[in-house]
Amino acid sequence: METPLHLKLLLKEFERRVAKNPRYTQRAFALSLNVDPSLLTKYFSEKRKISPKIAAQLLDKLAFTNQEKKFFLDSVLNQNSTLKKISLSKKIEPQVLMDADHFETISEPIYSQLLELASMKSFKLNRTTGSRALKISEAQTQDALERLNRLGFLELDHGHYRRTVGQIQSANFNVSTQALREYQKKVLNLAISKLDEVPISNRHQQSMTIASTQKKIDSAKIMIQDFISRLTDHLYDEDANQIYILQAGLFPIIQDPSQELQ
Image (cartoon, rainbow, N blue to C red; front, side, top):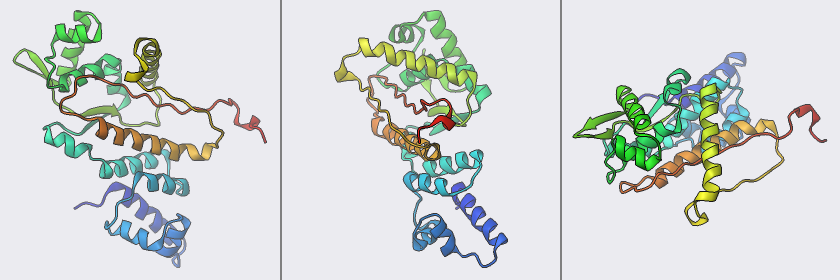
C-alpha cells in the first residue's frame, strides 16, 4: 500500500533537517512538533492515523508552503473521512476536485442544488420538477441540466436525470477567484433571505466575534474543513427529502494588522 501523501511530506521535512544536521534524531523532530516520540513512530509506521486536529497542530509547527499545507490537509482528511465508504455503497465516486477554470463553468448555486436533487431517491429530476423545486425557469433548469450532463456529473435515465459523481468542490481552498467569490456572495444572499423565510425550527444560524492572531488561521481553516467533512457524513441519508446549505466564514475585522491594539 502506498504511503499517504501527508506522511511523505512529513518524512521529507524530517530528512531535510537530518541533511542539515546528521545528528538530528526522530525524537528531536517529535519534540519540535510537540508530539510524543512514540506517537510519531506510530505515524511513520502507519500504525496510527494523524487526526485532523493533530494535523492542525503540526501545520502550526511546520514551515510548509501554502501548496504543501493544502496537500497535507487533503491527504489527512481523505484518510480519516468516511464519505468514501458511504459513496462507494451508492456506486458514486466520493469526490470531484475542480480547478478554478473548470469550477467557473458551474459556479452558480443552482448547479450544486440540481446535483443534490438528482441524488434523492424520491425525486425524479427533469426540467419541470427542477424548475418547480428551485423556483427558476424551465429554460434555466434545462440549460444547467444539459451542462451537468455534458460534464459527466449527471446522466439521463428513462426521462430523469441521475447523479453520477459525489461532492464537487474547488481543488484549492486557499485560492480566490472571481467565480468563487461570486458563488459565496450568492450563498450568503440565500442565507440572508432564509432568515425571514424559514422558521428557526428548520434552520440554524450563529456567529461569534473573537480576538485572535493571524498565526492560528491556517489551523483554524483545517478545523473548519474537518468539521464540514464530518457534518457531511452525519447528514448523509439515503432517504433525503430536503436540501440544506452549510455556509462557514472566518474573516478579520481590523484592516491593517499593524494597527492592532497592544
